[in-house]
Structure formats: structure tokens, C-alpha cells
Amino acid sequence: MKNTFGNSLTVTLFGESHGPAVGAVLDGLAPGLPVDEEFIAAQLRLRRPSGGTGTARREADRFAILSGVFEGRTTGTPLAITIPNEDVRSGDYRRGLARPGHADCAAMAKYHGFADYRGGGHFSGRLTAALVAAGAIVLQALRERGILIGTHVLRCAGVADRPLSQGGDALREELGRLNGAPYAVLDEAAGERMRRAIEQAAAEGDSVGGILESAVAGLPAGLGEPWFDTVEGVLSHALFSIPAVKGVEFGAGFAMADRRGSECNDPMRVEEGRVVTLTNHNGGVNGGVTNGMPVVFRCVVKPTPSIFKPQETVDLARMENASLSLEGRHDPAILHRARVVVDSVAALALADLLALRYGTDWLREGGKA
Image (cartoon, rainbow, N blue to C red; front, top):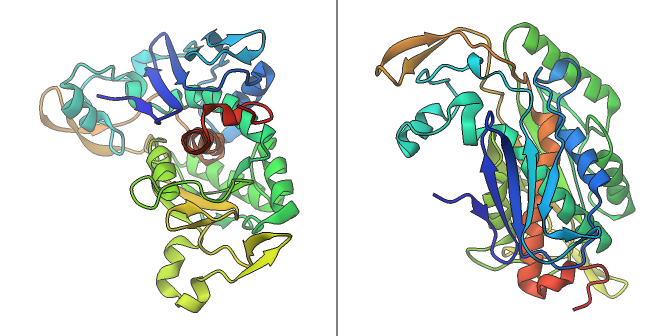
């Protein structure tokens, strides 16, 4: 039973949705990385719900760094972050009554009934707060090296945003703009239509899903391995750990199924002494290895399984059929909150790959060993 991701740089998650706290331990960080607690707090704010498109559970996310930081910089020893759970209502959850679409039944099979079931326990999206806090430290270090990561809501409830630019200054400008936006879209009018669709689903006791599109600009070519630790494989491994992510594609992805090779290959040329591609259908990766172009990927996020419509289910305590009318506080959509989680998880996965190739100290400011 393992809750750790990574090889050179590892992150371990702990806690439950309604326990005293959630948290993360980062091990393998380079010493001397700046730790900006205001930036961590800002990232956590992007994950928190707001308005009519989020849960009524409102956590302050007053995080504490317990170890691994001294005088504003990482020490190189394990960095532990905790975030208390303060706004809990455990009475909304009934032991044994499995919620369709949730992990309740799977948790019973794995932990033999000993798991904390309240709010989903260790399976809860609440633990992504710890991922965001840990990821903020790595995102900051990557930015110092010129590597930018950003995500927007490409599609939600059938409403589409325009796609990210393929590269260059236009993409970097978009990523910078998205990273500070409370609702990450490129087309504000589309974003408003998305919000109305989410509110309509909530009014009907239902939920919606969609697609998040992400890009990573500034990665060096040559990152990743040709077989089992491909860039796509490592990123997908991490991204599928985010609750509700049910699909990941890179570049043109599944659209390639209906195209010819002439439409999927990326023509190449030399610009200023480096090889670039004129298109980016392969999402910045060939043979499992980065080619120097932006790494582009999309995550399918399913509709939030917590809905307020009557559902058929089972009572795991009695092993009999039952019906469920859900109570509690739940999101009608989590796309707009999940995008900062995607950025954080991608940063952790890519920083691990960079440390494996160039050494732990590469991430330190200036990249000098």
C-alpha cells in the first residue's frame, strides 16, 4: 500500500478528508530553492471553490511547513507540509452506503472496511490541496529555469474554449495569463457560458465534466526514456492519480485515429541553431522523449459523482440493495478547481524527470551543481 510518487524527487500524500489534516512530504528537493509562502497560498486559492460553481465546504487552507525549509529556502532534507481540515460535517456520511461513481466499494475491497469513509477519506479530492501546496514549490523552481506550465478549461458541459497556441511568445503569454486567472479560459465569453451551464446542472441536482488542456513551455529536448519511463507514461501515471481524471491524451491524441500520416507528422526545420517543428501534432514528444517543442496534453475530467438525484446502490454493511439520496456539500463541476492540481502534478512529475537526467541540483537557482 503505497502513497508515494517519483524516483529522484518523491512526493508522499497523507491524511483523510475529515481527519485532522491532509499533507505531503517532498523528498529529494535540491537545497537552496526559494520557498515563497505567498505563492503557495495563491495557488491554494485557485483550488478553492467560489460562487455558485463550487461546494459549500470552504476551507481556509492555512498550511504549515514543518520541515525542510530554513530562512526561506529548501534545505535539501524532507519538506513536510500540513493543511488542517476545519470545515467538516461528518454527519452527512453514512457508513456502508456506497455512493455510485465514488471509491467507496473499491475502498472496502482494498482496506477491508477499516478505511475512514467520511467524505471519501483518503480517496477524497481534499488531498489535492496538499498536492497543490507541494507543487507550488516545484512550479516556482521550474519558472526560475524558464519552464512554464499552464492549464485551461478547453471544454465544459458542451461549451468550448479556444485551444492554446502552438508555441512561441503567444503560448508563454497565454500560460502566464491563465496561471493567475480565477476561472482559467482564453475566451471570457465561453467561460461565462460554462459557468451558466454548471449552475444549471447544480439547480437540477446534477453535475458536469469536461476537458482540461495543458502545455509546458521551455522543457529541454532529450527528457524521458524510450520505453517504460516515457514522458507520456510518467505524466499519465501522475495525472491519473487526480480524482475524476478518466483520460489523458498528448498532442492531437485520439484525433489521429481519423487522420493520415501526412496530417500527423510534424515537418521540421532549423531555426537559430536548433531543430523545431512547424506543427506540434505529437505534443512535443517523439519516441517517449521530449523534442524541444511544448509538451501539450489534455485530461478528461468526469462529472462529479456526488449528485442530488436518487440513485440505486448497495449497503455494504448489510450486503443488500439500497437507494441513496445524497446529503452534504458537493461541487457540480471540478474542472476549474482541478486545473491548478494538473499544473502541480505535472510540475512534480517533470521535476523528477529533470532531476533524473541532470541531477538534483539542476533545479536550484542558476542550475549550478
